[in-house]
Length: 253
Image (tube, rainbow, N blue to C red; front, side, top):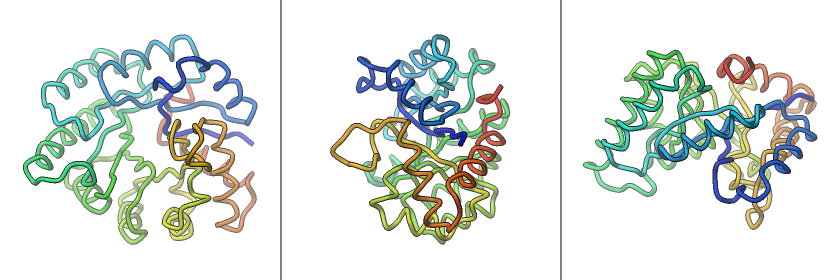
C-alpha cells in the first residue's frame, strides 16, 4: 500500500530529537511523503530547510488562525511569494471559533484567510485549512472567496456541512483519532471516498491521546476508514493517495 500524510507538524519541537527515525518509520509503514504544515514564519523557514534535507517532507507555509496579526500574515505572504516554486501547499490557514471568540477578531481571521485564498489561486496551490468549531462558516467563506483547491483537515463539524464542502469540490483528511471519535466516524460514513485523504496531524490526534502521534499512524486511519466504508485498506490507500496526488501534485514531483 502506498500512503500519503496530508497534514503533519514535523517542524514541531516534539520531533527535534528523532526526526530521521520518525521518517524512517513512516517510510517503513508505506508512506510516500508527508505534507508538513507551518503555523508561523519561523515554521515555514524551518520546514523549507527540512524539506531540502529530507525529500520525504513536502513543505507548506501558512499562519495559524489564532495569530491575529496582519503584519505577521504579510510576512508569510512575502515568504510564500519568494519561495512559491519550492512549496507544495499553503497551510496551516483557516478560521477558528473555539479559541477566538469575538466578531472583531473573526473579521481579522477572515481578512487574513482571504489573503491566503487569493495567493493560493494566483500560485495554483492548494490550501490546507483549519476550521475548528467553524466548519460550515469556513466552507461558506471559502466558497465566497472563490477558493478552488482546498483540503479541510481534521474537520470537526457536522457531516451535512462537510457535504456542502464536498459539493464545492473540497477534500477532507481523516486522522488516526478517527478510531476514538464518533464525529469523525460519521464523517467518513457520509462523505464519498473520492473526497477523502489521510493525515496524522502529528504530534496530536493519534489513536492514543496520551502518546505522541507520528506519520506512521496514517496506517491506523487507513484501516479505520476501510472498516467504516466496507472496503479493503488497499482500496482506501489507492484512492486517498490518488486524491492527494491531484490536490498536491508538487508533493509527487
